[in-house]
View 1 (spheres, rainbow, N blue to C red):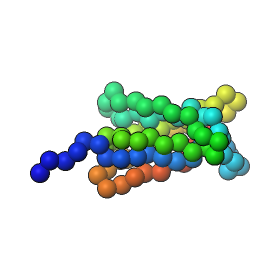
View 2 (view 1 turned 30 degrees about the horizontal axis):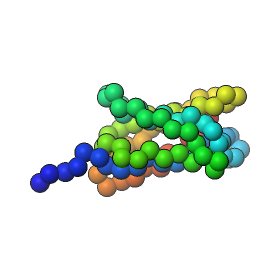
View 3 (view 1 turned 90 degrees about the vertical axis):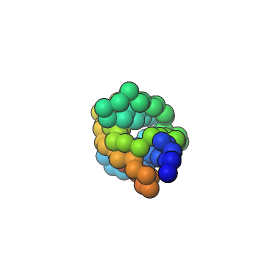
View 4 (view 1 turned 45 degrees about the vertical axis):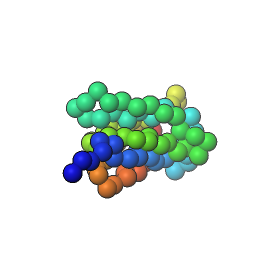
Length: 88
């Protein structure tokens, strides 16, 4: 049996401490123990989306001037599409 190396999507919202969305935040997904890094920027609703990501564990960081940087983790497995809530 041959399996694809791409598992899917990591997506979520970046919000502040009050729960308000943060548009324009820089979000980076780094695969733990590998050199796989992807960057994106949240849209007007604070949403980010990383497509075609290999299976593995990821550190997700978000930052925007005027807010503290924040980090969370996500595990992307064969049948799971993680959502990450990041609050800078």
